Image 1 (cartoon, rainbow, N blue to C red):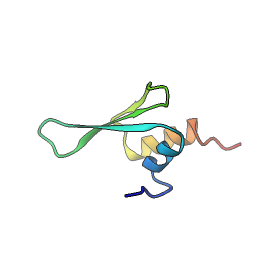
Image 2 (cartoon, rainbow, N blue to C red):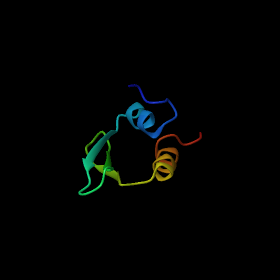
Image 3 (tube, rainbow, N blue to C red):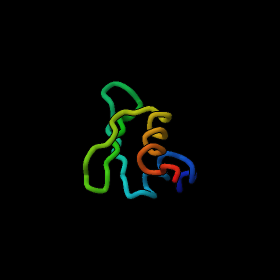
Length: 63
């Protein structure tokens, strides 16, 4: 399924970043790790709002 164009998932992909999802012990949710194209971790376990803020600040700055 293709992510919504304004979602963090779509924005990460558009900039060449990738998302790792690791299962949490004892819970149904996943731990998300966001990696830059170089492989460097840029965010771990951030909320939806934190991810969007990081993307807007570092990748989609207003010119």
